[in-house]
Image (cartoon, rainbow, N blue to C red; front, side, top):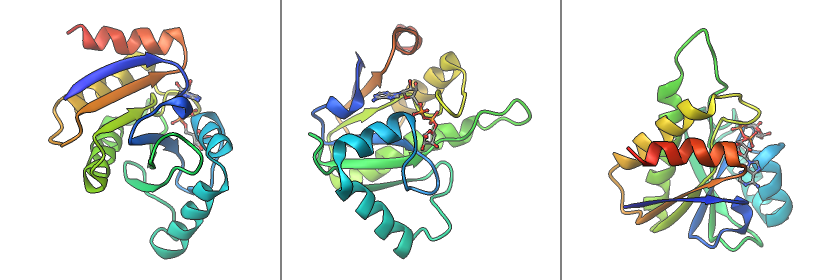
Length: 169
Ligand code: AR6
């Protein structure tokens, strides 16, 4: 698998699937979630509502992932995953790793070969960038998957540099 880095906006990526750093409600929010719903249009939210009604009445648990269509985006699917809120009281690293593993598992079910990830949990959920980058890169690198390219799409220089640092090892 190729791991690539791009500094930019995940909603502009031409890939099979983009991963959304969502929340359990699946009903949208700020940050990358807000950008994906704004640009992708109402079809994504309609799919999310249907998932809530059928399978996730209590919300999508942290660390899990589920796919919807991608509306007007250039991708074919959006894979929604719920990152953990960073905590100094307990180690939630396994949940952040699980977001990446589960997203790739869902990508495999869809037969997606190119998948773009944002820096999950590093915004509103306050995960320190260097640590999030380490967990994300390590998990993707060791995942068993058919995905051929994982593209990390970083919104600013700080995030880009944190991920670039992990890839030099
Ligand atoms: N493309 C790529 N990355 C982006 C974009 C974009 N268009 N916009 C923001 N980022 P966040 P979280 C980066 O807060 O921490 C939402 O309200 C951003 O700079 O989007 O997992 C959800 O509904 C940061 O590095 O996600 C949840 O309630 C990274 O994406 C909650 O926020 C993640 O920041 C999830 O928090």
